[in-house]
Picture: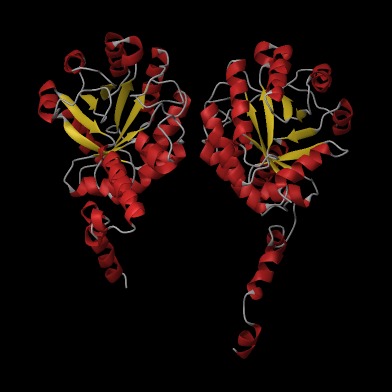
Length: 292
Length: 287
């Protein structure tokens, strides 16, 4: 089954879908191995993996290239951060074309001025609702696979208020978007209001120490959310684990015991060594090999 | 050996209206080098047309342009003046654009004051950013270059929107911000070209788009006016497009190349264009 179709099935299923954020092949595979049903490609994490902040510095080519690496590394549907579509609605056309080709199952497109800023930072600016709806229409009209999921994100909450954000997301849903994403609601009450006021399935963005309070996943499901992404969870875990290991080496002058304590082979096994080992012999002629 | 940046700097500084032919790929750059041109202009419009089969409306990414620049820089020894559009975003993006394109092998970067994503300078419906924003971009470019000779060519597209005087004033402000060369895009008469060259203290760029808005004065007259270079960004592309169209059309209609044989480069010419003898020699050397 195509990952787009699988993603739609999951979104229509009984439980809210939880998509932890990945930014490379390692994190994508770990999410799969942990038994999650979908992964989310974080734009901020992708930028961080280049050693850059989430200030709109990466190109569409770089973002899509990272998505392609991740879709090649796992079988789960990948929902990707499509930022602003990297320009105007014409750039959105290319962004959707390239993400579909990369095997991404869905992307979110936001209403910030391009180049954008992280949704939980200050100093964001918005494009007009007309320009934004044009982008959503462009994305919807461009997808070749009708199951490719278009998620409409509005960053209006912190710039123009909660009602404006809901209005924008609803306009985008009317223009054909599949899921609404009100970025950074600022209280539990606002978090609760989003699924009530948005006329379509809703996404919740769980950011650690962002502008939105933490919500139990079960409560989010009860509020009516269909999808929660946790973009920075693994990235921040990695920062901490790396900082601790690096400090430990300095302090104790020895290789620290890793959190994942494994030998060399076990490490590779988590990245498909068994499958690749099976291929070593599969295309060889057993008779000829035996004669050697 | 002179660095490509320094070579481009002196080409522009001598104000001889050096013709820079544009290349959208390594092959065109090789032709330009073989013919004895002094530098290559890496055309953004040409890359959009030839690589994406799309118009010049800001669809190509920095990454894609940088990959083209790197390939062209490997294919020829000539200095490359690279079309960097708007810097692909704001002043902060300009920092990354300069780093990436300088590393890719650019000897000069042309940056413009259009709203991102941009449009071809000879299209209708362009918009320009406020002057302060463009001045910030020029400063960002100048501050970021590692090689002080990397030429920052600041282009204004304001002529079509705000008029000639406003465009000249903008170019003046870009020079104050550190631009080495300025480029007032799409003046529409010889008189306008002369006014630009008179008014601005640094070498100027003229851009001759075949079928575009700026009159083709000829190199001698541009040199007299003191222009640093004259871009013929897509002469090679337009020639190749017409030839490919005519040859493929004849092949389709007639089922053979017989009637158009004179329109095709021979096998030997083609191998020379990509310097096959050099690669043969390398093969021998490392065998």
